[in-house]
Image (cartoon, rainbow, N blue to C red; front, side, top):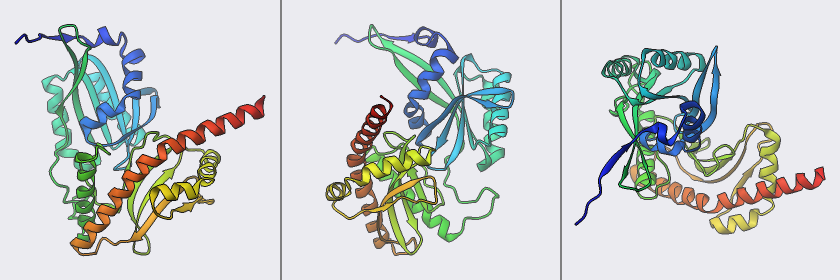
Length: 324
């Protein structure tokens, strides 16, 4: 048997500049990082203003609805970038920071470990080493190795250190089971940690326009939804109205009637399906709700991406004709 030889590849040979090449690539391939962090990330901005400085990448952790600051650095870590990370998190109100470098120096790993131990849930810090390898003349493979991260011990307290209420603990356990099955069996999400909240949001094929969500809503109902929000109310409604034209066909594909909620008094729009469901149900009933949620999330992911793409094309074509 003839074996290949692993060769280390410098990041600069793949991306000549950290700011000009690597950061834009990572911004367009956030799923690579998201898998390492165990979450779904949505790109918010690159080179985002933070006072007199600019953060490399700002993303949103969809499962916890918090901002994540990502700072990239070729070579070894230094004190300057550590200070920048803490400054960015303060100015931007971030809930997590990610420091990516080719080498995480021992003193900086110790600093990140110390901050994670003392800041607890108020700020999560990750130190990650980036490298690349190839086997003989193969394509290079990009590797991320987490050197320091917050403890993944079960969350049993609130940010203030108080014991979680029984209801919040039920939510955490319920969504932990739901996201574990979605991740391990269906590759639907990168999420790894359930949260003590009544909802969980997942990335879509175009998270800047729409996202998937499973939640418990008012009136003792469980809901699975496609949430349309690109930040522009007019565009949200245009896309919603375009989808609404085919509501019977979409409902037939889902196999159930859908609730079409334009939400005229809000920026976003929603397409949802409901059933009876409450976190205080017994374990067997909650398992039925969980399985129902998973089935419909998978249906939505199968049906809606092509529908959204078609509507975007149609709307763009209509505007082009109007301008000509």
